[in-house]
Amino acid sequence: GSYTYGYKKSDDKFYKGLSYGDFLIELFYHNIYSNKKLSNEEKNNIWSNIEYNNLSLAIVRIHDYIDLLNKNYENTELFKTINLNKKINECSTFKSNFTNDFWTIDNNLKFKANFDNLSNELINELKTSDLLLISLGGNDYQSSLPYQYINYLIHEKNYFSIEKIKKIIFDNIKDILKKIELKYIDFIQKIKLINSKLNIILVGYSPSFFPLLLKIEELTKKKNPTLFADFFKLINKLLNDSLEYISKATNTYYVQTFFFTKWKKYANIFYEN
Image: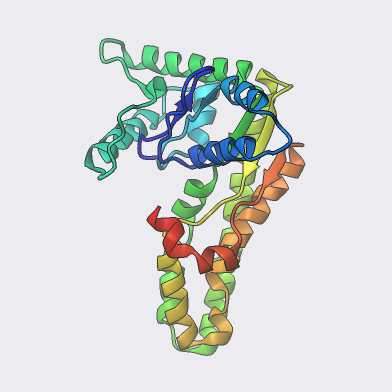
């Protein structure tokens, strides 16, 4: 996110940002040009005909995109998110030489006109696309986690109290995921009404600040190895299991990108880059 999302027009170079989808397109590029069964001409033809647009935003949530599809501008906080992304980019040590103009706000237009423009652009993107990768749900999930109870859990010393708090946390998380699933399924159904032939891939969730979570888990395991073993791993697994369920419920594809053991081994490399 952070206003550094990339794009590629046909017969043009790939403008790579630091947003999630950009790394997947970069991987696709390497897979094309490392394919020994394809001639150089075939590789160039495939790559030159690809158009890619990353419509992500940092801290964006599912309902922000639903608002755009529904043209529901009255209670939206989308513009706050767009402006925050711009400010994040201004403060960032990474300065891109380009910005995707999809989220541009025309200060000469009224709020509703700007919102309608974004809504129409999003709908047009969906109508004219062949493939859509969606990596949503993480912000909805993280912002709703019962952090107060997690804090209680970490500081509680009584074994039976810890067990009770742990159950409350996971029951709470399951309730959160049910709400996210309803929104996510509604979102995908709306997309399919716009373009029924669109191939949709749901991308699994990779946790933010993973090295920090590993450190917290290391400290809590020392306190109680049985109760805290794989605690954060299970929290992350619940979300990815939920995304896989959503994929099956909407007849879309699901790609798991997070593998705990491998990410743990290379955490510093992944998050440094």
